[in-house]
Length: 226
Image 1: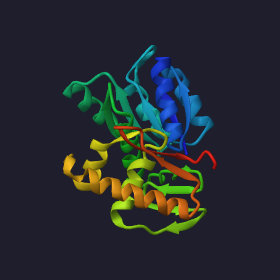
Image 2 (image 1 turned 60 degrees about the vertical axis):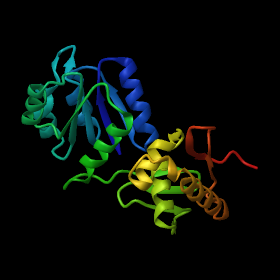
Image 3 (image 1 turned 60 degrees about the horizontal axis):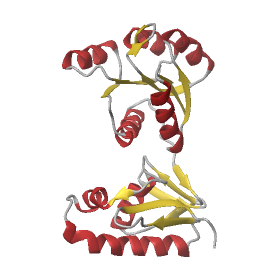
Image 4 (image 1 turned 90 degrees about the vertical axis):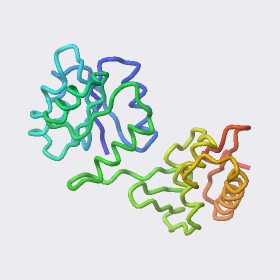
């Protein structure tokens, strides 16, 4: 699934492209409004991430034309223009969502997934690590194409780690997702869930490992071999 990033600042464009690529999408980048029609005409993009303050004008001026070229495209404004009036202008212009800078990469990906779940949107691709795949739409997992059946808390933990594959997820974040509150009294229970999930994935030869950076939390990554 392809995503078009319209952003004139190379550092921000590279950061966004790297993050969406790691989430399973295929990003392309352009830096000016003039490049958007050609890009949309050349490839079938599911989502466009659109800055507003571009060298040749306001990003909102291209929204109507973009939707004529690609009627099903989802357009997310990702911009430093953050006032209420700016947001209203963006939504009235036809963008599907509005995210202000600075933003969390996790929130950006969540908004992309949310836009794709709306009627007419494409399904988000699964996150794949080793032989393990996690479907972001159905919140289900499989190993080598075979469904992975696990208890609820293990599945929640697995989803939290797979959505951020390759990066450490803090104990605080995991406690919120598994227990609904950052309560240190649940740390022991969280560690037990992680231990059971780690062993289950090893037994089923998922070719992944759940690593525990000291004092931080957990991360999931491809196994490096024996």
